[in-house]
Length: 207
Image (cartoon, rainbow, N blue to C red; front, side, top):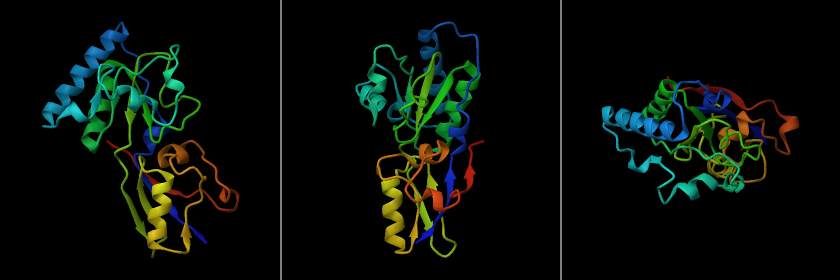
């Protein structure tokens, strides 16, 4: 069984959760200003934020927040001002723009298996950029490489590889719902990891 090299889109978002300190005074102010900012940015791009941006008043907010991990349900845990689930690169750029403009921290989440809470908790007002909709996987069996978006799960990657080849594999863990982005950027480990080099070849970062 040969190891498959991975080229991953938007992985660098995981290496540097954005922290820009600004002058907005309260969590409520942060929430109001960020929502207005991203709504304005979506309007410029002629995009609809209703299926992308979720506030605590939205019925889907709680289920999106918990994902694979119940830790955010704790009353002592600061909740994100908004949860953003982009479908397009421009929506990611809009979130980053508003984060930098308002000094609001972004926490980036792939599959939600982050037990340390780095992708969904913070001591200061923050938003969660949930990458669940970025799940495209493209396998090149001749070059033994794959382009994988960060929201894809390990199970989806395993299945896609198996459909293309009986001799190629990606060395990761046994839990199929772990997100590829978090697994690679967080040092995820599998039973065959010690016998293979790092699978990451390159990554694409939004401008």
